[in-house]
Amino acid sequence: MRLNKWRIYNYVTMIFIHPMWDSENQRLGLKACTPFGYFLHEIGDGIGFVGLFLFVAEPLYLAYRAIVHQFYWHLCWWLLVPIAIGILGRIIYEISWRVAAKKEFNYDAESRIATWIEAGNVRMFPTPK
Image (cartoon, rainbow, N blue to C red; front, top):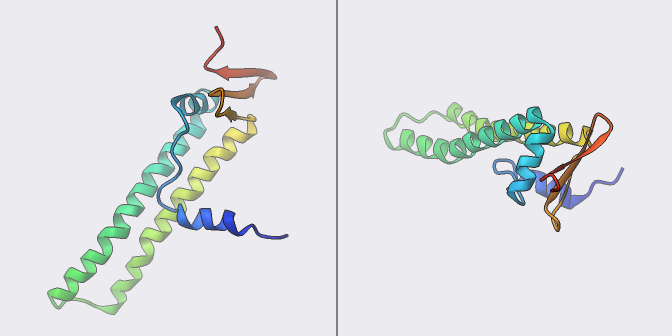
């Protein structure tokens, strides 16, 4: 199996912040398709934000500890915590899209219509008038 280097690059560079919605119809379409998947998506975004905050705050805290002469080298292990939190947020984000993929969720960016299969019927958001 050949690994796609751009796919790996996207995973590594987008640990904390995930791609935004293309439009409000995509977001509401996912919410209508699978509320659980949408919930996981929001949880993954929140966890990623916490990881990003800690990614900035922890080095500042370690610098503060060094300035007041209370720095210990074993505190450097705490630098791995934001990365682990970011990876956890990314995993939850990916699971949310896997849940939507089970219902064959598809979003067409040109027409801005989200479609999915529910109980054997094709559903659309926004619904045609």
